[in-house]
Image (cartoon, rainbow, N blue to C red; front, side, top):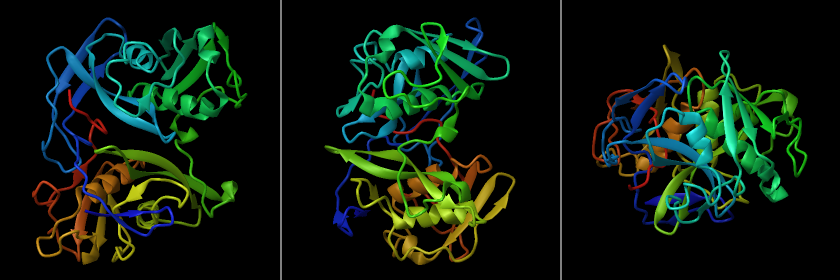
Length: 348
């Protein structure tokens, strides 16, 4: 597989094994009353097929937890946790070092919250989640402060009923993080971004953010990393701007990868209708032109990035106006592709 590396090397040849990166998912719904939890089992992947879906044993459910990898990126990893009536509190507790996550942490990743941090949560009717952290929370290195903040907010807001997050420590509202003094708004959501990447867009007042998914690798494992980039407010079509960022690839200063080639081009502006965006590429989107194959890494990054936009639920992929592409599993991409419930799913 030919994958572009944007760190002073135009491209490198990688033989990578996709290890359940966006595998089957267990949807898990809760009313957060700590009394009544309903579960619904389903399978959904980026490719729309069960593919390499993981089997989660009875009594467990997949959760997206945001850990810190060895390169300092905040990365979602889906782990199988015991079913619980207190789903938000449980997910946050699995972010604590030397806690219940210890035996589950993938190689090269660390839990973001300091050891012995105790957590309590209170979800208000308006969707504000108040997270109270014990005094042990302040025992972290300043260099990790932004990563810790992003990890907490992105882990908590994976649940539909959590709209915003408010942080407390020992019962008192935090107006700034306790070590590096990063200012905190009264309430926080995913607009804080994740893994911020500087770009040529320096005017924050006249730019907007977009989360783009690139690829990273530890050993033989490949996984997706969300990166917040700034896009000029002059861009009228966000889907086109996101595709452009995927083609440009990550910053030269990173070790991230992109499977989009520089000659991949949109033949017309993406079209939106009822939550679906249609993207029409030239044939350079194919990793195997003879068999019309689109790299699974390219397809996953495209769908993950586009569906981060609040108005996009699915992606219809056309090549020169036709639905002829085939995914990495050999299945035709002839229907809109939806986002997986879980990202970077490992083996359990």
